[in-house]
Amino acid sequence: MYVCVCNAVTERHIAQAVQQGARQLKDLRRALRVSADCGRCARCAHQCLQATLTSPDLGRAAARFPSLMLAEA
Image (cartoon, rainbow, N blue to C red; front, side, top):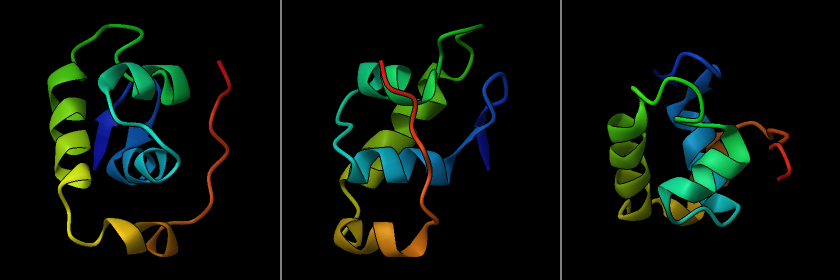
């Protein structure tokens, strides 16, 4: 599912960002530009972030998702 339409960010992108160290919404903003434009996705992005952080499958998440190049700040 798309979380941030402005920057074409999906739940999978967020899960991979968590695998790469994202722990807060500001980390997603830096890595994926989530909520950097209109901001309407902030609540959904935060919910996806929290769900991924508390997922028992967090250790295996990287294997389920294809490799993505994240924007460097």
